[in-house]
Amino acid sequence: MSPARAFLLAAGLGLLLLLPGAPAAQVQQEVASAPGAVLRGLDKVSGTTSDLRVETGGSATFGRLTITLTDCRYPVENPAADAFAFVTIHDALVPEGAVFEGWMNAASPALNALDHARFDIWLLRCTTS
Image (cartoon, rainbow, N blue to C red):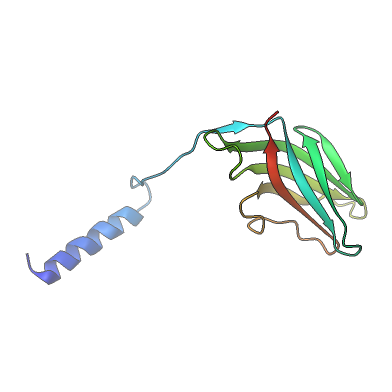
């Protein structure tokens, strides 16, 4: 086979992999839901931090923020790694609704972070007991 033909064949196979509906190699981890999570809060004005233990379905308060945990999941094979949690955060001074709602990832806290002028909240881990 000529080099030009081999290149065209390889390019065609590469495009096939990019087509919607084409089978893709996926690695899926088995995850488990935890009874709660540990989050850390930082008050950027005072410089204080606090670890917040929150039960699934419960809430914790940090400053004027109320943090509600909907779910915390972790890989079954390695509970200490890559936890992710769905949280909703309300600010008492913002009556329009949540200032944050979504998944936080312990391994990459900046991936989906709370954007707040005074406070930072990030996930540390799920609680497994």
